[in-house]
Image (cartoon, rainbow, N blue to C red; front, side, top):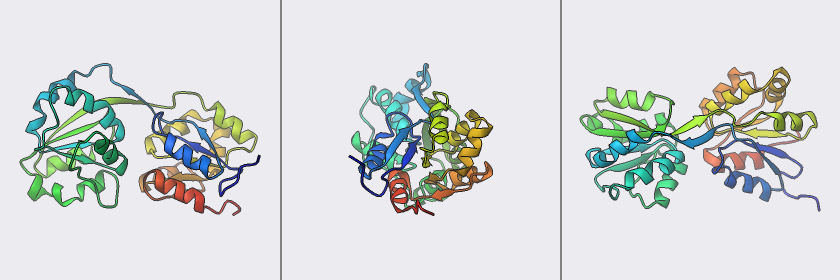
Length: 260
């Protein structure tokens, strides 16, 4: 039986890390498409959690605890809550709705979430993080190793005391891009979804000249302007800026004019 739906006959690459790709893959399948799973970032626990364990007993001393991603929630909360329940005096904050949902699923109340733009800039625009409010307060940022320093640097400039604690590790593509190259060479790769500019850089680095040519000619669906900008710098020719998160990606996939 042939698949039916707006994505029938289309192979869409899903590049979210393992454990986070299922909702988008299910939505693509429900629309008649064929998801091709190729994670661009491999997320794993840190070997050394001593820094996270050290901050756990001090959690109540912070005014705000910022979780940079759902991975931060998954990898930090077990260690933090092993000491005591979440202090009600500490407000959790999330950069995006996926992270906020992960906190809500673990019964962490009162999450601060940007109104529209889901990134560090969006969070910094919240009135609760204005200099007049945050100066003199302590802020904990829970994140992966590396990453942008904009949030921490700006909060320090606004007078906050900021501690950054890494709670998980990110690595480049966990496998060679042979599956993508094979799909391109047989004409069975119609689009790629990408939720990370770092992941897109990893993909570019992993591809040979032929693979890069294919990537540049393939529609790329991204939920953030920063990823679109990175794609443009790499010479990609068909960049679709979607709404935020998985919902934005699937809506744009469904609305795309595939015959153009």
